Image (cartoon, helix red, strand yellow):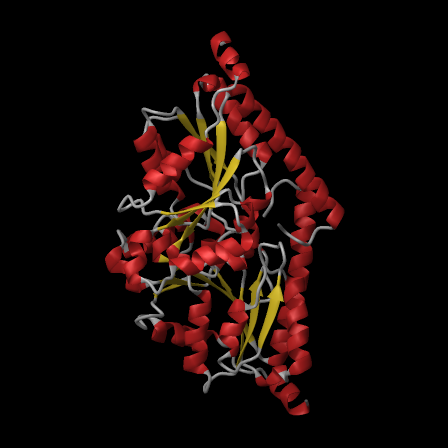
Length: 235
Length: 235
């Protein structure tokens, strides 16, 4: 969040974003979709995680991706190879997705597909450990990723992201032998910020922890509501 | 930059920041100080680089640090061990340093020390590959860091930072044997954004490239102007 604005303006901005996020979430609820917002620094492994997730769960869950990037469709193109709907949003100079941008993505998605057939929408946010944490996009849960190469101190230095996360994935565990790195210290620092979040150390290279991540996904996915089932039959 | 504001407001905001940056730079020029703004994602190695730089150049250049972090003085405390002035700025929820925050730091620095005795002020920005690139703080040159763990595609996906950089340090080269990583590809991607920047691959663990970085620092440091020498004699 840029602090140079006056407080009233900041409050208005976040309030308008929140209203948009609530609107988006009502759409997801109506369709029986669980939406997750994946956030991290650049290069912590969000796209690699999505690749593994799409490959593993394609036959079990019907998944769509909303892919946020400042420029390029490089990540979106990587994910399109998994034959799932990938809606790309270029944010231009903006450092995060906001609920209005995601609303645009949702409308594209609903125009092209029957959303009530889907179980999960995974939103990959712009790589940024600060701003995305303040802008809800309509998600039911927030997933933060922290690569072990970033250092154990990051939960203390970038507190908002770690306070907001429902699930924290500690990524690139395969590099542990080559780093001065203390997993217990990262976990202790996360716990100072957040006593509740599920914490899962993973590696998309060795597969470490991915089964736990898939189980978390299965558990967080809302069962289709009666309303959503009815909607599915109608369309 | 948050895009949800209207364009006129964005222009005003950046204009006010620029005026403040010019003001800060005039102070530095008067004192014969070269100011550098170090920017990168969280955990790319800015603080480790400063540690090596302070240790190596302490007898040759008089250096002060302005240390920006959202919360904590963890990095500032690491650098204070090198017996240089370290001014800590906590940005709170803000995702970058702006020129007004740095002006506060400069005034603290000038109150406690004789600034005309100094050669270099190194500003360590908040870890964020997006927003800091848009907010000048009064620097004479911008230094961006990109860790090889972040991936070769980052210059294309986060273009503003790479367009703005005068020097790009490709960090954590010691991890190259353990990654699928192509240095030529990173360099080619940087060159798509920026044909001029000095590019130096480094490792603070093995020392690779640090001599080139120190040489770059020596070269970018402005010789004391006549005005600054006079000011130094007066105070």
